[in-house]
Image 1 (cartoon, rainbow, N blue to C red):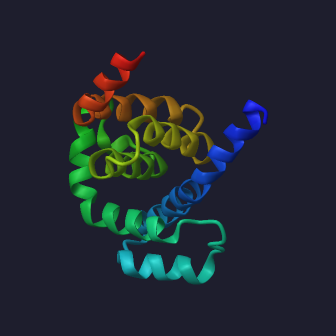
Image 2: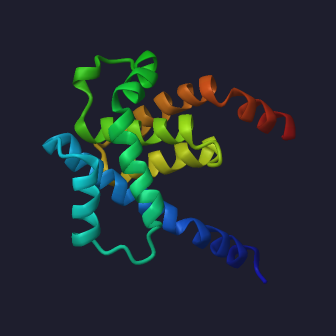
Length: 157
């Protein structure tokens, strides 16, 4: 087996979660604009979107958690923002909330995966330089809330 093929297989295992994050991003963006309940947004997305190959449970978990914790998530990233929070683009805000939620409440997901996924979402859905901004904010948050994980990683290198 070639090394590339085994890596593709490993990447394939994570695709349902990647798709769940993408759907959650879209649902949370809609929530920010409409202020519907998490339950209403989840229900609407489950009825209207194709969830083949999507980790539906993770999608629902992310949407419900980010909606219920949005104030705490905003407070967690606030010290790392180099601009006024009011100037955040709606998409940047939702990507930061999603990433902060995973960093703070999903230790089973490595911090590098959380940050890489947020960068990918920023490239795909954000403004031109949003990925740089998101990377910096979430990296600093990870330094605070995932310090043991980061130290262990450095020790392995």
